[in-house]
Length: 328
Image 1 (tube, rainbow, N blue to C red):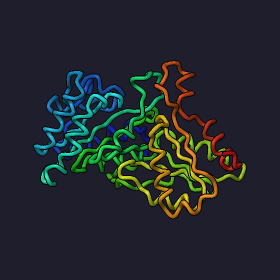
Image 2 (cartoon, one colour):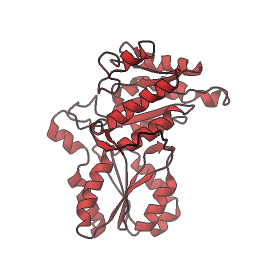
Image 3 (cartoon, rainbow, N blue to C red):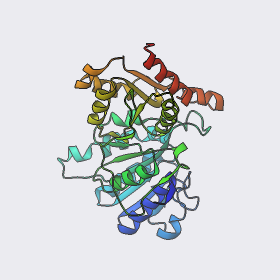
Image 4 (cartoon, helix red, strand yellow):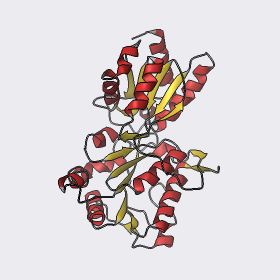
């Protein structure tokens, strides 16, 4: 299989779907000549024209509102929100309109929108351009929340998102855009609600997503030289959540560490722990469940402070060793 970047996997998937279905269009800021803030839509304006690559004013509520109207009229809008942080401006449109219309109209209305948004820290973009807000979106019934960690997953999950009849929030971690991986040239789809065990192990389960998958695997590979085998569960979709894979893994290993970049308070790590607590896996635990998360602070601009605000490989290794040693 050819190796392509995470960004190119997304770009190619959008391109193919726009070729296949004339109802698909992309709407957002700087997505035309500029090619998008991160280059995902580069070249698309020349190929598809300004009626399908729609440049907008700087008004995120207007962008989402226009997409909702188009979706209700059987179009297939793909919204690019320049930074995930800006969805805070759109919560009425996303949470009260797009997420609820299918339910409120008794299933007779559908709102097939894909809302793409780069999230996460690590680029020196500071407090208003570096947040991880997936927990906020998870709390709004009617939304699907997708967090691919590899080019392969990005293509497969985006394909599924583009064919969904109701809103999908598709979160792209900024540090993953340049990451390469094997991606089949043929079309394929990855169903929502199916986690992926990225690394098998017997000593401890780590449940995580996005960039933290790669940091955890790097640590797990080092620990393997000492005979420590860590199982890494990549959730891939936060809503729907694959509870069964989590339960089966924790039942096998007897230990759980949940890792996410978002700040700790009311983060989704608590949801994973609640799932395990209410399942048969709880009886198999031989150590308290732990979570490793971002600090409860805005993301700093200073690179050293930014790095200290979210889990790094050394933090992951330290937490794993503490759990395995019984240092609670």
